[in-house]
Image (cartoon, rainbow, N blue to C red; front, side, top):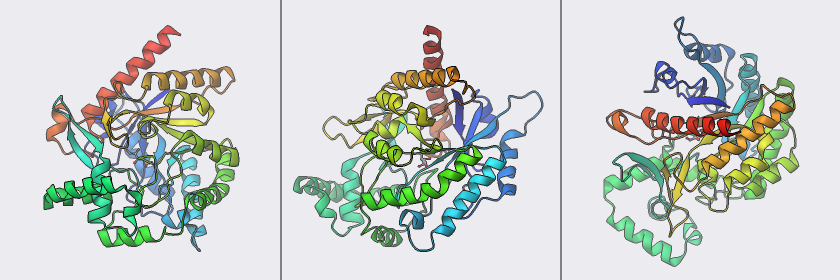
Amino acid sequence: MRESWRWFGPSDPVTINDIRQTDATDIVSALHHIPIGDAWPIAAIREHQALIEICEPGRSPLVWSVVESIPVHEDIKLAREGCQRYIDNWIATMENLAACGIKTICYNFMPVIDWTRTDLKYQLPSGGYALRFDQQKFAVFDLFILQREGAEQDYSAQEIAAARGIFEQMSEEELKLLTNNIIAGLPGKMTDAYGLETFRTTLAKYRDIDADTLRNNLFKFLECVLPVAETLGVKLAIHPDDPPRDMLGLPRIICTAADLEILFNRLPSPANGITLCAGTYGSRPDNNLPEMARTFASRIHFSHLRGVIRDTDEQRSFYEASHLNSDVDIVGVIAALLAEERRRKAEGDEGNEIFIRPDHGHQILDDVSKSVNPGYSCIGRLKGLAEIRGVVKALQYSD
Ligand code: DNO
């Protein structure tokens, strides 16, 4: 198991030398400054790699091992005429990364929005802060701020009334914040930031795209990408849709074990793999994470370890809990990942380790007064990593 840490590049308030002090060995990063749809040139990849890998003699080395993510242009998701150009660019990026030795690639196929939360500073009983997704606030956005055509059909009369009540209580400031959280996107997002009007226009492009169509568009994309990935020895790791269900009238197709079965039955290529994001899949009560980790073990190249606690009365709402105390059985997931690594080793595939990273951390201690990318605090993530590391050691000891 390789301990990795996400770095957003030179503007990340958590520097490479800070990360070095966590004792993580691998870096997860991307070229966020290159416009979505363009190919990443080798020179730009090498420049970023040098920022990560060149260090003073005697210091612990860090390696850029995982890309999170190469964004998939909306035209590919929509299978629009002319999208082949973007697929070719995506493949060129993958080839260039492989030429630089970076061969584990996370990506996602979420239309229009990437990962989404309604609250970025949800206060915990400890006084620290977490990220939260609140279904009622999301309904406020959808029904009363965005005023999406047909939105009322997606909510019960009771839900609409509750959302109206909340909307009427919210200040201008709060409404603006909620809107920004949803349409401006969160760090690491692989979609553009929108204004309300462009957001509506972009959503409208998906009017005729249902889940089957979107799935077919993913297959068309992968049919072009997988053969090249196989030749290059690249492992692709699709990230689930977060939160894992349809939203804003958009289909979301990587949400459950059943979705993954469909993907692998259709495209069994060994290059076709997943990012097991425990927190994302775990925000649905019908996903059993240790079981998913065992079922799809050979497909897991990368894992985001974190947990969520779902509201008891509204299971679609959740907050990001501490890494080990949540509704997600992280210890069970880690045990399954370690078992898979033992299997790979026994079969002679020793170097094929799983990259894990402590996903989103709380904002605690010095994080609170610093500028922090939501979810990507230093101390909060380090606490998560330390807890995960403890579990790994304990499980390895008892083997
Ligand atoms: C959130 C992340 C996502 C993820 C992309 C993967 O913290 O897990 O931003 O990086 O959606 O493609």
